[in-house]
Image 1 (cartoon, rainbow, N blue to C red):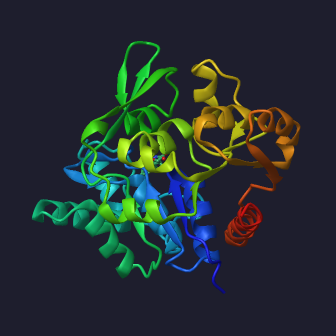
Image 2 (cartoon, protein in one colour):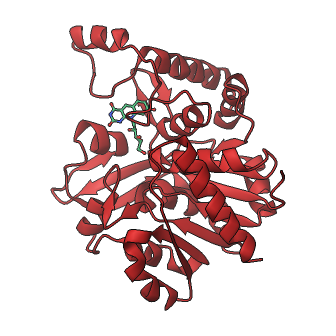
Length: 314
Ligand code: FO1
C-alpha cells in the first residue's frame, strides 16, 4: 500500500544503511530516495572505493555481510591474502566479491561516467528499486585532525588506526566543489520529510548537509533525525568517542542539540526517555522507540513506527 508522502533519507555507515533498508521495505520506490555520504571514499590499490554507498546498496540488495554490516556476504579473501604476501597495503580489507564492485566502478569512472550514473546502474543490476544517490559526483573527502597534530584521511583514522587517535576537528575537503546529482536535488525539493538515519552526525550526516545546495533545501523542510546512540553509546563506530573528544557528553540529547537549528522531530531509544523533556524544551518533538535493529524485520518495524509518527504530524 502506498504511504502517500515522499521521504528523503540521508545515510552513512552501517546503522544508517539498516534504517534505509527498513524504509525501503515500507515505502514504494517513488516515495523514498536515499542520499549517501561519500566523504569516506578513498583511492586504494588504484581503485575508487565508496564504502558508505556500497554498504547502503549491499544492505538493500541483501548482499551485505550480516556480521560486520559492510562488505559482502559469503565473501572470500584470496586477493587480500596475496596482497599481504606481496607486502602490499592490506590494512583496508577488500574481499574478492567486493573487489569486483571497485574494479568496475573505477573502470566506469575512467570512461567518464559519473558516480551517480554508476550507482544507478549497479542498483539496477542488484535489483534495488529505490533511488540511491551519492551526495556528490565530485570527490569530497573527510579528514580528521587529531589532538596529536596528525591529519588523517577518514579511512586511515577509522580502519588503519581503529579510531584510536583523539580527534580535535573534522574537515571536508573540496566541499565547495561538490556536485550534488540533479536527481538527488529534485528528490529533496519534492520531499515531505528529510530523515537523518542513525548515522554518525560528524562524519556521515554533516558532510551531506554541509553541502550548500543540500543544506539550503533542508532548511525549508521538515527534518527528523534518529539517534545513533543508545544509553550514551554507539552500537558501532566512534560517534560517542567523538562527542567526548569534541568536548560534549555523548548522549541522544547531544545528537539532537547538534542538529537543533534544523530539527523538527527526534527519535531516541526508550533507554534515553529521561532526555525527552530537555529536547522538547528546545522546541523539538521527541519520541521514544526501540531503535535497536538486530535483524531485517526490526529495521522494517522501526521504519514503520517512524512513518506512523510522521503521518501524525501532518
Ligand atoms: N571497516 C573496517 O573496520 N575495516 C576494514 O578493513 C574495512 C574495509 C572495507 C572495505 C569496503 C567497504 O565498503 C567498507 C569497508 N569497511 C571496513 C567499512 C568502512 O570503513 C566503514 O563502514 C565506513 O566507512 C564508516 O562509515
